[in-house]
Length: 442
Image 1 (cartoon, rainbow, N blue to C red):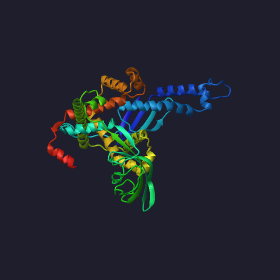
Image 2: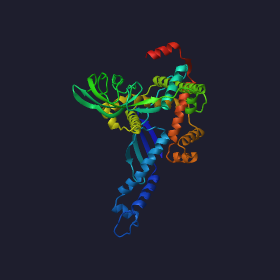
Image 3: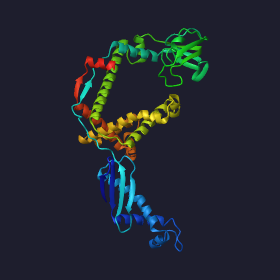
């Protein structure tokens, strides 16, 4: 087989493929042996008609068509491998010549990954932030532990306090008319959570169980529903019960109940260590992200629309899967936010384009620096994945091999190594107090 790739447009390649005559003849003969068993030809038992008779009765075109159904995909894949192009869509194939005794000639027009002109990616400035864990940080984490392990009492009498969860019925109106989403029965609202319209929760403080009260609020001007944004609303609220947390005192007994430590001081030290580790990991992630963004900004590449659309499909599918795990489908989400599917896509488009561009630039840097994934690295990654899924490593490895997932795993490893390469070759600078001040102001 011969294959030649010529770039005819910015991201479009014309593949010219030639298969020798013998290869086509063998494919036609194979097609004849398959098809002759499926047709009835007068004077011959099924499958016994000679080739010459089959050609006169059925026609060579049927054989040629069947032969090409096998040859074309195989020839295209081999040509892609031989020429080293990276298609991003299905090819538009044209059979130029397919006749026994002559070479088969094919042409394929296909969009490929765009060329990337990498800019400066070594010696980039990477800001390392100072990690400090304060006693107040540890206190907040202890408070979360208290709330996580608290007892919840249901009160049939008493008054609402901040931090309580109120069971309420409510009906809202605007200009004395009910509005969509303005009614609820047996709704549990944590007072102070900020999950309702500003001012609503504060007006429930001091209510007694069984009391009905009028609550008056103004929807924010930037509220997600244009019909409600900036409108004054009144609610009739009935308090049915109160759920109140009973927090355990922060002492050594609390430490023993919620951890493997015997004293509160040991628990505080452990929390401090974990918070510091988490902060350092976040610092490292942010530093890598910012360095990659600088490398991408320095590169030049025109992202094809088809790659943006493919990225959008992945992002939307991932978004829908996350929502389904929370019991919400995409249709309900769009109704709630009063957006169309196309509006949501347009909102996500900049992120999709940035994601594609980042992938293309990192691939180009990896190629320039000959960064690859070794067989040992792939096996180690598969071992970690098997461990995470609680699968036998050898069986998991064989399953991924059957499903052709190794390229996906290798690409992930190469990406991580490329990002680390940027950090290893960056100029690390310590964050100053002035930097922190500017960042906080932003």
